[in-house]
Image 1 (tube, rainbow, N blue to C red):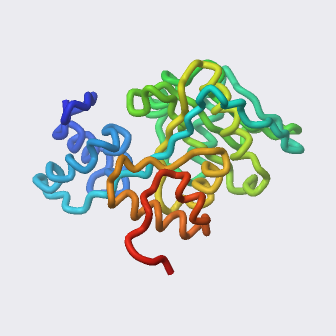
Image 2: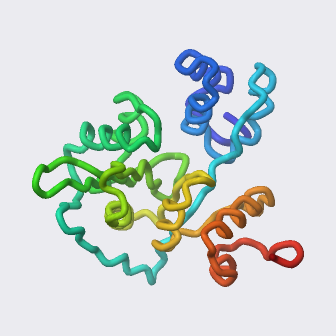
Length: 250
């Protein structure tokens, strides 16, 4: 238990597990700790990592939320020429292949995939885009029921193979995952992302996701930098729930 947040591993177990699998690879450690600990616990755990000699710990991931509400009608489905996009009940092997070949998430093992996606996906929430001619999976997204995101569903592992990007597949698979979460009765969908993933954040904003900062000034500053990089207008920033900037903007 970390400040009221239940986790499956203690801090020492988490660090030991990461070290056993990743050695001194900080990128591997970042992914491991982020997968194990909720964002709310990541600031606190930095002190523990310092104590075992790991001085550089990454900032918490950015969080976004889409709330359905009574008025939510869902997004309009759009087909993509040459591809079929649908929920897939036998998704595990194909989705894991897309995730690993996308180059976005490193190399995920089958066990990690089972723990994070396969065993937690909501009904109809494993979405694959396949080439119509070959049936090859080229893009994916999943809506999952994970403690980290409750009471909302979690949008997990949105990925498209590099040679199939720029065709709207990411938007289409995310739409279907959101629809599945809504049909399953969740009040909304939450996700974690990184500051540098500007194309993905632009997609999420387009779909109605809003930044969540919990009033944290550091997170607000990071979000403002991201939104500025995307040339998001001030009125859109206001809708996101971010506080007005300190002083004039240039």
